Length: 91
Image (tube, rainbow, N blue to C red; front, side, top):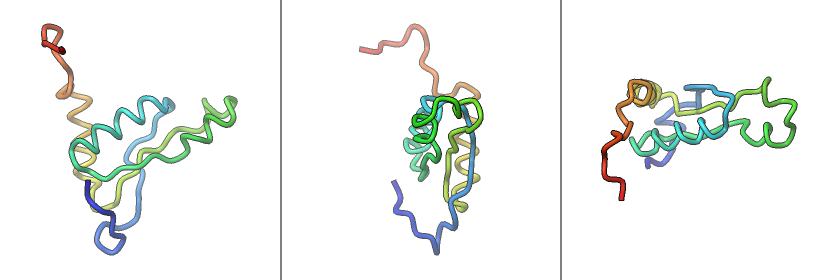
């Protein structure tokens, strides 16, 4: 993964929000696999107060410079580009 440099990469911005920390981690893993720097915000807030779970989403953040690449990775995920076929050999 790339080292974050605020002068080069800009501020961290929200790429996507979701209410499932598991989904947020999955998406962050896809971004990291594509070598896009990414981080999560507010995931621990949900764990500290279950009543906030339906009110506070987990934010998936990327540096401003990486926003376009991040959108491409999420679009590929939503299209199913990373899905495994049912007949694939997973062993």
